[in-house]
Length: 620
Image 1 (cartoon, helix red, strand yellow):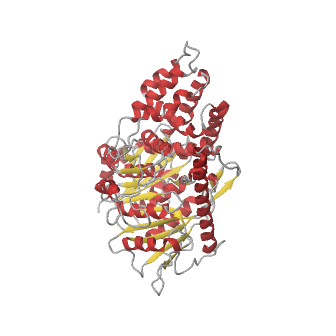
Image 2 (cartoon, rainbow, N blue to C red):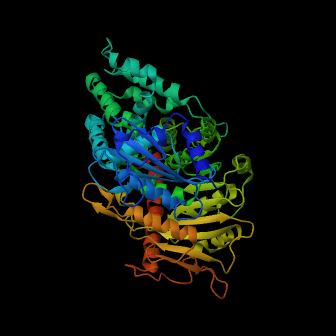
Image 3 (cartoon, one colour):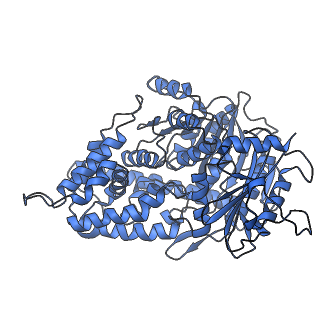
């Protein structure tokens, strides 16, 4: 195994002239020899001056040994980041080891100027383009241009401007915001929107011409890709409400300009992608519509965590059968693109063939398409329709759904990450449908009420699932996970692998108590990371990967079939780590939450029937 092979892989990825190599690195940077105690000059394997910050790279063969393994590469690059003549300059360090592009192990590090502290950039685990690396550097050095706090403050203020004088209806604000974001991506719109004037006809809204330009821009941008299996959607009709928006023209232009500077342009450099999903939560918070529609959007840190649990490979086709605003698919797209190592043909293939999404809600589908367009455009296989092909808690596909099932299976999805609606039997039905779509050996990661498999009414369905898939892990989530959406449902992340042998009766399942995810409720800001999430996630990933019992991860291993052969879905062996509440209480909370959702759905249906009959509804 040769270190030169690793260096060649690095050169091939970035190009021979992108980095300065060891022999040509200017001595003025004062890198010192990595030999302990030496004060001689030393030079990293590769170096790049980014005009304000630096990149240093150390490559090792990856062969076991204190001077050749990946740990040695990390140690050496840390040494160069610390011992140099430019302590007032930010430095990114890259440690690389391995003999093939696919097996490269890569660690990215960051040292802030005038400090000795070096932190790992957890989000980067492979070689990435200089542009991508620059975005992550900017986030580490100066804060993400779209930090949660800043974006929330801006969107809350924007929501108030939309709400004033009922300018934009609450149910349309998220789509209106997405329309403005898409229009700002349209070169023609960008060149003319500031020139719009007030119509001479006083009967027209003041911003009539600007509204027309926005809708035309959305139509131009979104009408480029359509899937034949999707219900037809006319983007001009979908965004027709924009033409009725009546905001004074001068203020309207100011709003668009603010969105451009504060959100649209920074979004191109941001490492966080589901901007429209976060906007959706804020814009509907006043009306409480999300609660009525039983939509639960996955928090960003759990979204990324779940996609990572799926363990994506470069060629994987990823499916989300209830994609909402598209957050899971965008995370998956980002991870797959990273694994493409800059290969533009491979990246185009990912966008066109490796992402499949379903959404039945018209607003969420439009948001998902908008989100995908704004962040890479993986819209080729987004379908505006119901994804359920297994209903009634059974693996029975109705004749009307067989064509859809066959189409999705022809795309050969091997990973599915979903957060289904929680009311009625949806979690079980979505689990079954996902397993039906997946290839043999495919992996399903799903977050749903933690009593889904243990409820007596689901026992037959749970056994049917375990005849077709192996349950790999169950991770219990915090009770307050959906605090920002005013939801108290107790959930778990379940991991399944589709297999013809099903779940062996004596097989052990890894359970994890992640009631503490390092996030705390902060007044006016929702749940925020206290700085512990990265370590917690890393411990849990390791426990799941290794199938281990670990105090730090709060993981344990247990069978889910007892000695009598009966299913005990919450595990035969109980949680060995101290806990604040029992699984019985958690199950009771989940049952109560489900009952409340069913009641609210029934009340909504009754109100609709009474309204249609001209009788009117009931007061709460």
